[in-house]
Image (cartoon, chains in turn orange, red):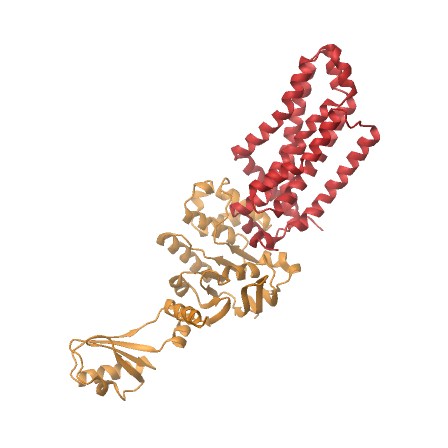
Length: 311
Length: 240
């Protein structure tokens, strides 16, 4: 089966300025794909390019099975939906009037039931007749999501969907994305929020004009960081080297404060029991042993800092 | 190119709903025509019966053609850049609507209220003249060819003014600049109406027909000329 989005050496320049360069990746059907990067990395420009709002300077792409060309713009836009960072609602119009307008622009059949279903998906059925200008930012974001769902898109581009939302409103958006994933909608999610990407995305790409890395969050962690056991003892070990040296799956260790040790391991399921036995044998008074987990934020910062260091 | 009536209607209906709920648009549309009607109305109503001869020589009603030249220009100049500044343009551009349909919906939405206002003001002027001016003055003002010219030229001038305004709006990055330029662009048409009214340009039947045909052609071309000016990428990024 063809991927939902396929991008090959795609680049966009505005005169001398490079917005993004040589992007190559694929997004599978039903996948939630996170697109991360610092401000100015080219995330929004990439989304606009894939959404046919901007023409690429070079390279090729296929969206929902259709080659990205100027002639195919209308056909691609029929099969996708985009939610820009700003909801862009007509504030003098009611929620339902906004949705009616877009249902007609997508020429959806039976618009009434589509609108009801979209409003139901975002729990806004009770606010259908409210003017959009009277809604909170979180509710406006939900209306924008309902608008994006009207056409039953094959690929849904969400550009910073929780930007500026309070935690409760952001959680609602997360739940909706989870719902859409269950329905098999392919979601292309750009975000600054790494916790959001880690929680929602099957795979993430980190962009900083060029693609820095791509993969599942746990894969990226494993690629960049060694697995580490964090050990705390009541009294510092008298000879830690003798305790840790030669244990299976243990690569190296280092002191981390008084009574603290960080042990780099290749396989924690092998190393943890061996380290525990060695500590007990050495008579150590163990307070805790745990595997330290690097977050996606660590991965992100490592990659972006590494690049900043190279410049 | 086939046009989707449903998509054009969606833009048209949305625009009218926005106009209706925007007090400043309604106020602007109401005030501008008044500035065109007050002076001619006072002049005509105060004219003695002996003054009708002077009126017969000119075309005083032509001044009122300034209404369809100016009113829609303000609306049209806002149409694209206004949406862009509000952030409502991007979601529309992500839908399958082609630019030609989007602009047609916008143009029709600006045309309808402009025509309604122009004809309403014109009707009000005629009623006032018929009821309150000297009979000889009234018959001098209400000349059949002038009334016909007013009826025919009003939509043609309005359409021309709308395409100019939309073209300016599609290439502007600031609403105020677009509205100022839109008003400026409609001044030549306004000047012509005044020169006709003051009999500086002497209108013959041939000239009237030529003018009508020229406007018809310009209106037809307007859609085709303005559509390529609506560049999605430039509107999104401000480049190109």
